[in-house]
Image (cartoon, rainbow, N blue to C red; front, side, top):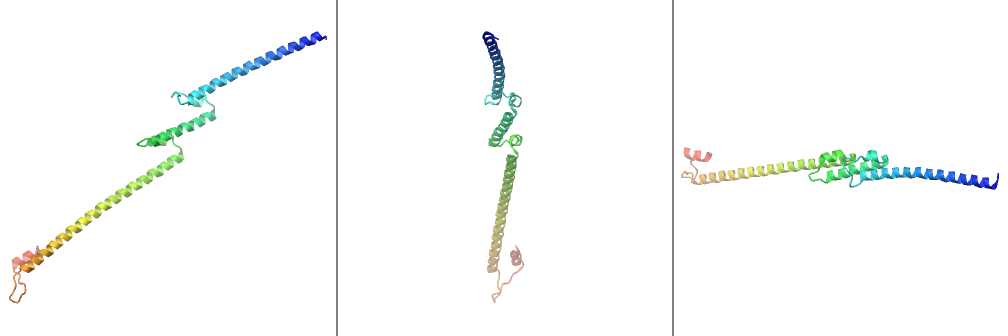
Length: 175
């Protein structure tokens, strides 16, 4: 083989390698374009301006979709907890088990506190009523005692100073 033949074979080999490399690069570029399109669709599905009907579970990598789902539940949980009045359905639907447990124990403590406050209010009302009854009893007893003493002073007396009550006097004393 001559030098010219070897150079021809070398040039042909070089052209074949360049064509193969170009074809491979074109295939890779198409693959990267498709991957870029898929990533852009994923970002659009999980971004702040995402449409409500976007499905990150189908558009994104499972790891990204999983993290997005956890983040979306956390945001929904925060919104449910910060709503006034508190959105208990939203908490049950979106919050994790530890948050639900903490909320349930907090609600139970609130209920116990309200029960204790109601018991205290009833006790105070009962005590006030007992004080009012005791005051009324003391007033009535004092009035009866004063009336009896008044009757004792006005009751007819014998010549030796002893009281002598007739029927009317006894009736007045028993009232």
